[in-house]
Image (cartoon, rainbow, N blue to C red; front, side):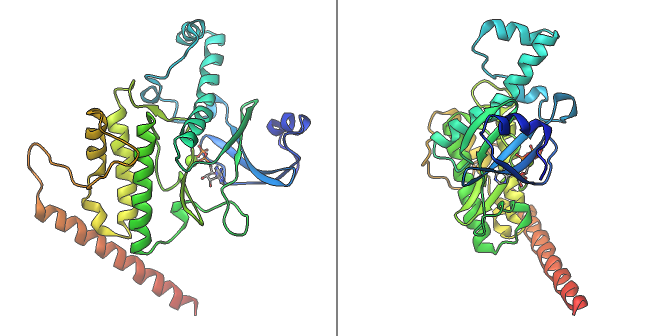
Length: 286
Ligand SMILES: Nc1ncnc2c1ncn2[C@@H]1O[C@H](COP(=O)(O)OP(=O)(O)OP(=O)(O)O)[C@@H](O)[C@H]1O
Ligand SMILES: [Mg+2]
């Protein structure tokens, strides 16, 4: 394809040899598959600040370390320079997070450089070498759902052991290759230690995964990994290989079994309806 304007500097520098095609454009960025020598890679071009939506919200910014104090002062002002510095810090956050998480053994795309607002990284691919599907694009068996859920929760634990919370974890930000789930899309990653919203964000990430995988394996809907992980983290007992139960002792002891059973039944019904719908559609096609 014709080289998009924002990728031209990378082509001119010889970092990219060819731009092959564009993947689905997200809310925050455009993602291209590019060729570098004999390797396919992914180029994520961040949209300009005004065109981006929610992720730059203050809740994510808290506790981000800005090492250079002149910079920190500039960022706190509404000057043009301050805004530019804030923009750069934002873009760097995903690159920083990718390096930190890769080093911590989390399955993320390997970062390969960051030039002019473009992040070059490993292409997470399926067996044919094409960009891997997102969790949202795949259908899982209950066994797969349980297995992938456990692996994603283990990644969340690894991330938090390295001090980070994804902050926007969902079926749209997890890819599936032949070895299982890969976590992507981290510009909003949150420093757990310095952010007052950390606990809430961790729980939201974990809840999103429970809800998604629970569609295929309803027994997951009654797990409570978020609170368990956070309690271990706060007491300094969280390690990448911490053994988790999925249960959490609530102080109020309000676990209402009838209510939980109703949730499970509703999910099972929904899954049954889904299967019937798929079957009806297949019959219509015949
Ligand atoms: N390393 C990668 N390998 C393969 N596909 C990728 C990779 N990175 C991103 N993608 C694809 O590009 C899409 C958009 O990427 P990403 O989620 O990072 O951007 P985004 O614009 O922040 O998305 P959104 O705001 O919609 O969540 C992903 O859903 C995924 O399908
Ligand atoms: Mg995304």
